[in-house]
Image (tube, rainbow, N blue to C red; front, side, top):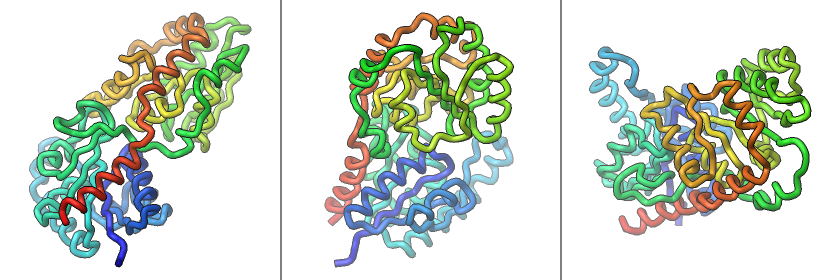
Amino acid sequence: MSARTLLIMAGGTGGHIMPGLAVAHEMKARGWRVQWLGHPDRMEGRLVPPQGFDLVPLRFAGVRGKGVAGLLKLPFTLLHACWQARAALSKVRPDVVLGMGGYVAFPGGLMAALRRIPLVIHEQNAVSGTANRWMAKFADKVLVGFPGALPGAVMVGNPVREAFTQIAPAAQRYGARQGRLRILVVGGSLGAKPLNVVMPKAIALLPAEARPHITHQAGEQHLSGLREAYKLAAVEADCHAFIDDMAQAMADADILICRAGAMTVAEVAAVGVAALFIPLPHAIDDHQTANARYLSDCHGGLLCSQSTLTPEWLAQWLGNVTREELAAMAAHAHEHACLHACSQIADACEQAVRRQA
């Protein structure tokens, strides 16, 4: 019997692509053939093929922020994308299609539904994206990473790499530490300029003997400027363009200062680390604030708006917080981890095929 085929549709950002890759590897381990529908000139075109999965091209992008001209072109670009998706489905002949978000997923999902191919979708963010909101109306199974993201959906969480699930418990890690707090600052793989600006100034306001140890992922384009900022502030910090082993870096930290992308929140919970979330203020539908609230509402993290994040505010908070308080926050975060999201999404794909049969 030939292997069954899964077609994953995801693109645009790492927040859609990385969880899709986690599921791709899980399905491959189960004996499935996996292919990927995506834009060859965008992030998925760089990330997916090196992982061993064929990329089936579909060139389509969203129209948000592109004004009236973009809206006028939408019917024509969508029609063209649907024709591309139809051709891709004829070529791949998938047994099930999995939509993981991004505009590229919509035409593929629509064509799959019209051809009666089982369709499973997964929404990573606490506020669903446009493509998934539409596809949820006709998908065979709807899964979400946060409660309430889509009506009638099954909450499974977001898939994280295995390394994030193999960390010692928070009580054990925090209880073994003494001395200065350890802070990890992460703005994503590209860095986050506001965090880079505030951190050196905030730490400089603390007495020298009370300053925490800083590890700061700056992003390649900001690295030299950040190092200079810490130097001018007379603050010691380990600055990196990119941290390869993020799971271990989180495990070694007392507190993570970060944005609130869906995957970051999932990784914080999986590791069990205290986090100060600074949501990206201009994220679509303010979804990062909603993501952060999943943990901050249960005392598993602290939510701070970018407008509130001043050097003075941060210095005061860091000067008052204790390792014991951070350990409790980390434990609360881990209580809300969804460690089996990847296998649950894979199960849903297999079940959709069985129901179709």
